[in-house]
Amino acid sequence: MCGRYVSPDDAAIEREFALTREGGHFAARYNVAPTQNAPVLRRIDGVVRLDALRFGLVPFFAHGQPGRYSTINARAESIESSASYRGPWRRAQRCIVPALGFYEWHLNEDGSKQPYYLRVLDQSPFGFAGLWDRSVAPDGVAIESFTIITLEANALLAEVHNVKARMPAILARADRDAWLGASPDQARALLRAYPAPLMSATAVGTRVNSPRNDDPGLIEPLEPRDP
Picture 1: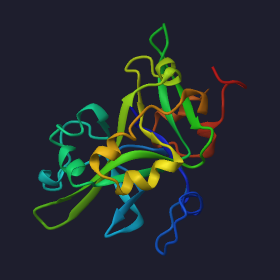
Picture 2 (picture 1 turned 30 degrees about the vertical axis):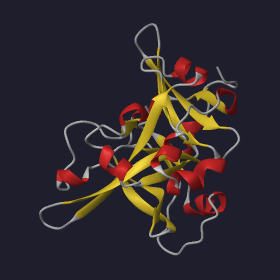
Picture 3 (picture 1 turned 180 degrees about the vertical axis):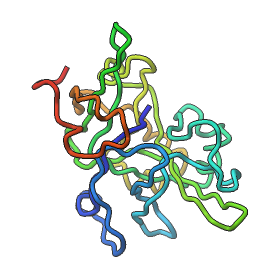
Picture 4 (picture 1 turned 180 degrees about the horizontal axis):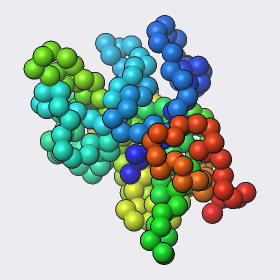
């Protein structure tokens, strides 16, 4: 799964994703957490936009009210059948969530959990494959939100995230345009585990456990080499 990640600033996003825009400024974030707003890329009326959406999808049928169950991650195996995600999938409401890295927790033999910072070595920033939706409350206020798609872990993530062995769907650079604009069948073919040799995992301190902490020190390694 993927519940915490590092989000780049808007200048880095614009350079990497060849985006020209006017609008609000997005600062780098080092501990994006569920319910917070974060930048996502999506195609609206043929134009790729960078917008701030809520992390944790609120389905259109929820009348603007987040549900009891977590919707920060959508399993790739059930996006076509899940009540929360089949609508956005059918309507091709796909998005890209820009990131510099993300965190996962390893369960140690003594029951403690060690956080790791995961990076993609051949892209910076890179993009998670996501879905977005719009839900309108009875008072007319609309909430736009997103979820990150997950799938079975590669060898590296299976070792780090050793309880559930899941990982976020990371898009190859060459697949970004297709993810935003291709047919559902073509888009589904892009959902595959990113190659483990193109990723790194570094143990970091437990300050990342609290979403109140959000600073560059969170990604400082505890050890000089990857596990």
